[in-house]
Length: 493
Image 1 (cartoon, helix red, strand yellow):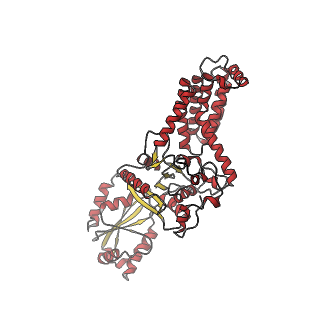
Image 2 (cartoon, helix red, strand yellow):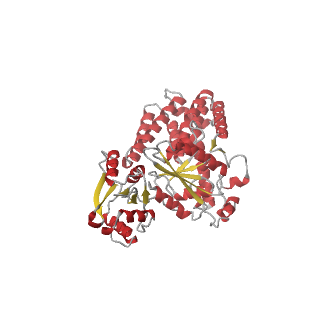
Image 3 (tube, rainbow, N blue to C red):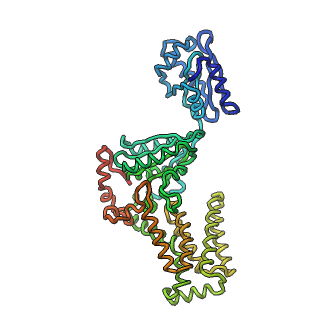
């Protein structure tokens, strides 16, 4: 509890907030003859100290008692505070020193009064925030260009403006004794799977003792297997994508000071689609999805297929193409596996360097580096032209994967596939493929099978898988009919 003596409160606060150069104390007086003391406490890096707004708030306190501020007394002030009668702006009633520390660190201006064991906290944050812009990592030709920011309240407002229905629930919790990060998760009541929601709550409640700086920190507590190369949650900066996931019964997670929205549970098919699939005609969307499926297969298996065919199964290659491959590999001192390993490692290094370099030079370095290294490798007889083409096609195919996390998984799995192909050829590829499939069938996301929609086979689930049916058919689903019970409009994907 706070003391009745305002100077005792100030001394206690100064002891805790010592060496905090951006925390300021202002001492002033009020009442008849300025007989009573008061103190204002605020953090200048978080709050904009506006004496005009504070004076208006104090005048309203006095006006409630029919007085002017110069004639106020602690008894009248305490009576007004207990009645919570300040209409100028929202305020917090603080009753302990811990509440005062937390309010100051959250951008509040705290007022402490003599002979009053309670304080008032006024929110006056002045931290500059990034404006709403188009997401950099999820560009779109059609559809909205509205992206999230680091402001949690603004992100929630963007979601709430799209789902104007009380069935959209938002729950909050706080994590970390130092950072006190605000975490929010939202879902659509009666549409979300209750078992999934209960399991999510059980897992996320264990994170409250840890310092969470970004949304991805929560992934380790949510995912089923931390050793699996496949992502079990997905991220987005697009509000339309997040809303579509909510309408589909998913849970979204947001953290203060992070623009990323985490969507869970996530299944393998979720990583093959984009929001733009629903903004173009179904025939175009289906064609693009088939291209992505082809890119998925190429990014995962093309180098290993080349190694297996050239090393163990040359009889499966057409004669003309085989002669061209043999001619291009003439003088190469390494086997196909070592050749592919060197080129893949070089390509991965170039890609990582392009990401970490400043954007103005990153793309140029990646393109020029790939051209120079590829041409130099061919001239030095380290790699054959056909291997450069294989590695280039593999890299382009991985860029066609719409979600970065899945693309990384394919880049990681590519190397075990290459090792298996170099040791056992096609048989090794079959073994690794079956092991991957076995892992996927045993993998779960919040208790739900990772291959949901793919297996078991249900024709209704395949309407939005590889070929997208027209929206007028797709939206006629039991889940959407359930949404209409809430008085909501038929959702957009």
